Length: 621
Ligand code: GLN
Image (tube, rainbow, N blue to C red; front, side, top):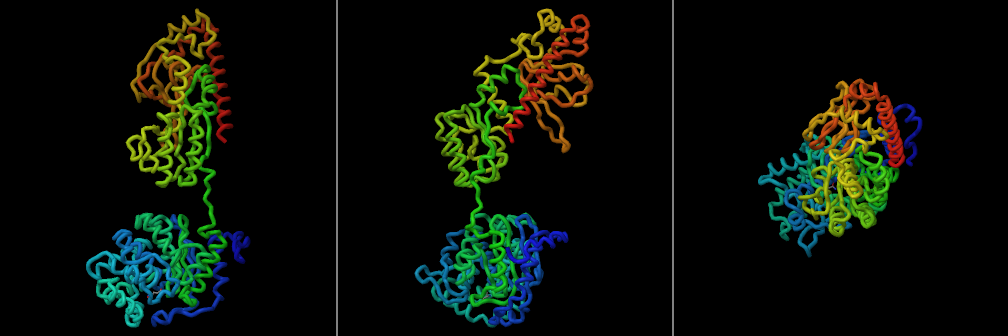
């Protein structure tokens, strides 16, 4: 760590900017006395810069800005504009056209060197002056004015606020920039550009004279870190392919003839400008910008390089210091024998599921799917295939999947012969890359089903498992004696109960019981199924259990009598038998054992459910 970083006293003093703000202050204080180098003088207006102006800013991909020093001081963007203009050219013309205009090869030479790639008849790369001047010709628009307007609009979109040209710096460079003029005319001479050089140069000089602050540059870099979406405004300014190409060239050519050393020590795509700015990108995380005018022999800000070296080292940001984890892609794996759906089951069914449930597996995927993590997932799927009737893959916590992962997954499932095991994907929102594998999707192989959530998938698969074990469970053919709640009642007791039944029919979606209603009956499902749900504080509903043929609900009324504590809705067309509590109590007056037996069964079923819930909690940690 840099001296003074994360000083405990500062933390104790309660710095509201937190450890990162404290760190930046300490770094600034440590590097301010570094008085090497000199400000750029070849553009006269730049020579007026104050060598002790020194600002640092870090912007995160969600728009949080950490700053220190002169982070609001305006200066001209100069060559830091180059990767961004290149991005605009890619966005406007596509990569093929842009590659005709400029190459991607580092020169190993200074930013203003007069070397051109004669073999390919184009400048070597867009990060040096020659390449950037050639790219200026690609700006969208038909007149110099509309091109400048498009450029400023684009830079403003990246920064999240309108930007303008520093006219004094522009004029100063236009009047003295004869080396760039020479480059432009050489390129005209060999046909690398075709527009009048003065027009191209005017745009290029204006682009270099755009006035920015460290905070602006950090935001522009954060937009690149955030896959092209401006963190604060949410505007999608660039696409991921353009970002990748821009970051590649910043990595290989952004620091000119210092690029190799920079890659070795800092390892972040970056770009410098002769006004003293350096901007660096931490892909997926943040943008960094530094302003300090004194330059080294390469034309890079001396304090800027030192700041980036320190930040990269102290926070482990080098692009090749790998932090990808593929081991955690499967967050949790379990079988139906260990964890069941919320469907309440009879004892016989529950026993069958404990016995047969190992044939249904659930894999919960987390994080992003890419080559390495997808390989883990498809390997596990292939291992499970022979032993499972079905595998549920839960994508609730799968943030993303790249095209390679989708392809690997598609090929894996297509290999499962005749769709065995059955694959059910849950929690796949529309637009998730994995949705391509679902019925109707681009990569639909007909082998994958989908259900909105894992609980309903488990319920359906349990029903399949049970239908293998039992014949279709339909209570219209059930004797009351086979219902858990009435177990142990003698013939006379059952007969008495039969007289207390009234049957009801419900359409799919109908509400059978409403939370708060008077609880004066309990129900047994004869056919169909129902969901028991509670209302959450945000108005949403959560399903807590479901019931099917032979299962009872509302039986707490026997104990409490008061009000319903949950809603019950029919999941499908449903027939229910209702038992009025008053009638049961009447029966109990002459046959008390009817009520005591039912209550005893109720206690058994509640303890079984509680034990099962405890078991599930154990299996899910
Ligand atoms: N406008 C400057 C030039 O062309 C940009 C150079 C730079 O920032 N490295 O010389």
